[in-house]
Length: 280
Image (cartoon, rainbow, N blue to C red; front, side, top):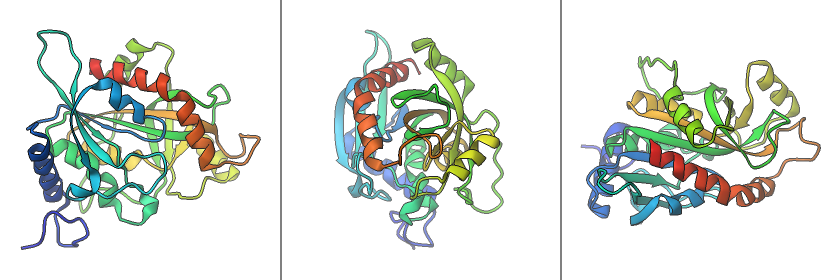
């Protein structure tokens, strides 16, 4: 029998590995079921501290199928948090995934989407996917949060294997976006274009993204959203514009710029996200 705790085993069933990860999390945290999951990208990490009381925090690399983060600005932990709620309301728990695997790390698509599959196996019905990204809209300066209304997948791959056909209409839930706008009516929305990375997009690629309907460009989220839909999760996507995209920005792009913009916007967007999650 293959080791179902390893995604590196070609014979492993990724859904069984997700189940093993969820079982490990339940035992290690003492929380049998989580209601909502969050994947916190660049700039969004501070939201975890505002959601409620942390029940347990696990090093991600100890959980089956997960690895330590390879990107500066990402947190290598998985946290179980008891969500703040009004007295008398049912107790809810959030699973916060601070360790995200990107396609450009070369670990394979199964690793990229393992977090959302684990969230579904852990009982979550909703997942919030966040990221830091480049913006095409001049009105969205660094530090602007933008709801994702749809995406374009330019990675050339999919997390679904075999003859697995999934409808992606309303992939980024209009219901959840409406809830987010109840918290902040000023939130804009746009189409996210996922490139494979790790290099930043060229000005020509950014121009192409705009022609095909894109408003935001980045290297994550889209593949996770597809896997989340297949797993039955309702998806809310939120991007933090950390810089204007190549050819729109008057200066060269750098990861340091992304980190700096995330730090500057962190307190404001973290409070926003925490309030949205409490309403989901």
